[in-house]
Length: 390
Image (cartoon, rainbow, N blue to C red; front, side):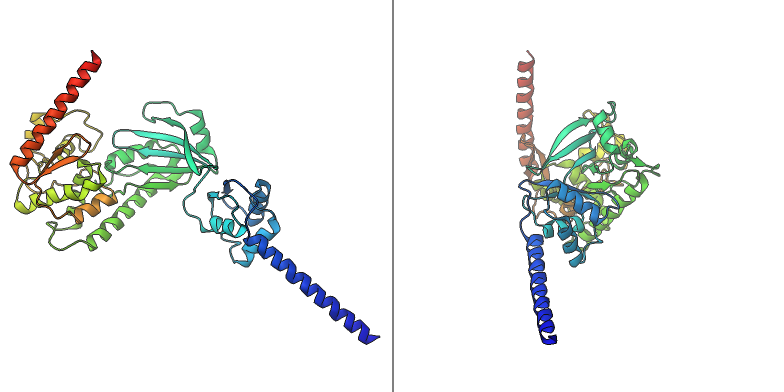
């Protein structure tokens, strides 16, 4: 009898082990296999959310088939306590393993509602966007000028949503004063910024922020990022450039930034000014004169006057030798790298060519011919505008 009992027990144990192994294998297949959703979905992880709450939410959305398997798999991977706050786009048929990877890796939010405060060279704007899960692309819903208009209700509501993504986007070429003034108008930030940071020391970039984030802390983050970018480019610079310090390179980068909006031209523009410095020529660049007039506090909004070109300031490169006293804007990474890696040319001049870019020249004779062509283009455009008005 005991032999039968032992035999039956062993048989039952084997059956149970086989069944358990089958369940585990099934669970692994469910965890790593294609998910049930046939469309892209936006998965939102709230601050402080538990894995249990997120798994139930995902099951209700139809992104996963079983909340328990999702939790067990995340626990087995050692990721159950690594949830990162944010809104993340999950692709169609994403597996539970894929989704766990997305919501524990973190990084910038990739979907949901976002409010972007854009600090631009000529004007600021606030944009409300929502992602279209089917295309994975953000679609603009509302846009307004914070300096001139009343805030639209949808943007005000979105700024108060705990799961909304908030960003401050700083354009290349804005001044430090413009950045500080823009941050003052960003209602979702808090605290008073201190003094306007030195020109050129803030990195133009997109910064994801939290509701109520301190303005001065954000400025400090921008400064730290710019210092890192500048030092890395300085450390990799070629031998023989006419700069005595990283500050000189930053000044040059700011001039390059203001002189061209064509990415492919940056190194050529930088080569013109480097060649001029090496030959002892004055830089003679209008953006430096403009900075001497405005000192970075807004946009001039008109052409330069002859008297302004003739007035000596610490930035008027028609009147002073070498580099101006300070940067004239906050240059982006590409302009900094161009200033420290100029193209190998013998160009000394450039002028607009009518396409948005510039015509470069080695001699004054070539340059004068390019200027003459540009004057013809200006005259043709003026005549066309007059005809259209008439």
